[in-house]
Length: 278
Image (tube, rainbow, N blue to C red; front, top):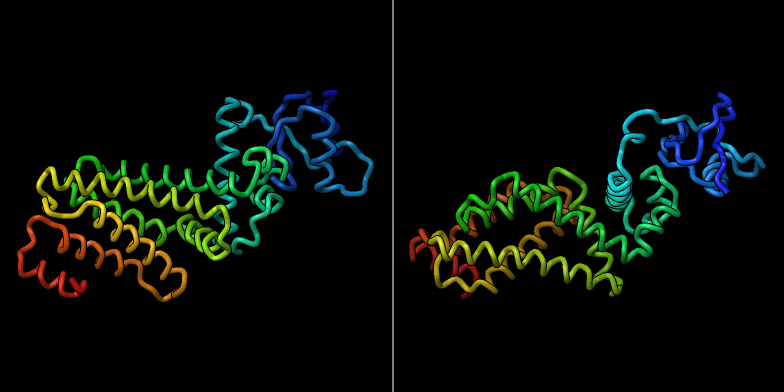
């Protein structure tokens, strides 16, 4: 049965559906039923028989004006971001629905309701990161570049993301855990890497078509090598705090141009091949 939600501090009643925020934990939510009131109360008033949370205050601003779809999207993104931050700060062992919900300012129930399992959460995290990277590349006009420049930009964005934000660092922490434990979640990373490889192959094919990448470049092998270089660089940055991502990014740009660029001389290409052991 829906009931009014009352602040013990101010004696203000909030009707069911009224947006509210707890000033103690900053959680924003909509009051719909008595069991929600009791659940939130238990976070701060454990052991008391009260059915109100004395920390709750009404929200008259943005939350009240948001559409339900926008609120769902916002809560999902906050939970995903909380997962990434926890993974980067404390490792995989900290990724419980309790911790993720608390970090995001929501309840454990909401995190579980949205994702259902750790595999569901991880899939959402991976999709979110791919979307962020795609948006970043689009903002830098990747589609306006020739194939070779677009390929180099793709690598720049990947490495820069790990250099400037914890999100990609968290991705590789999660990947390492999935591989080391031989868990079923490893398949999610296989799919993620194939998704990246598909984009790299597309850019290489574009470069061969527009003349910026040599026609004789093996698309499949080139995409595989570039992808593994990106994984290796990211993994090394996790292992060695002194590893310079900036220098690695610059060197990878040179290697891609030297190995696949259409304007590279045969002498330079032979030197690259000799180093590679061909």
